[in-house]
Length: 215
Image (cartoon, rainbow, N blue to C red; front, side):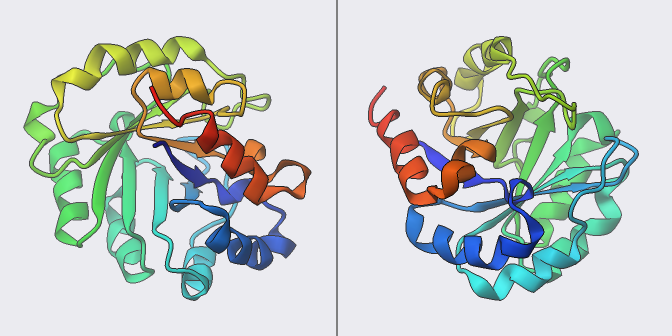
């Protein structure tokens, strides 16, 4: 069964608390946050204080995607705020094994994310600390965020190389394409608009999971 990680950036700030309460009962598997620095990507949406402020509202795992250069400094803060899963960008980490080890040392699951243009290198040297791989299927923070199905080729080509690694697809995931994403080998999807559209969170998550009920 596919895991769904609703992306909280798609929720109006004034209704986030209510949405978190609904996600608790809607079948979400975790809650996803993007943390940007305005440099690696040209955006700074939510910041980090909101992660701390929302933590007491749910027992769902907090999954944070660091879209920033030199992310090492913020790793201890994320751990202190109760983050369970933390991913950094391969493109932003000159020493990815060391960065992943820091995340792991702080008791969080460590992930590494790839922009659509980036080929996946040999990651065997990172395996002692690597729990999941994130493939972006849209250009990060591009205005119209067009879904790029060709990125799934990287998933199909690489999944069999790394037993036990969770594969996450993030970007433009919808009811229409989730079946293909799941069939390509994704274990988890990050989805924003498709989860929250029409104020029907429970129904949307249910529909997405039903579309992935088997391979």
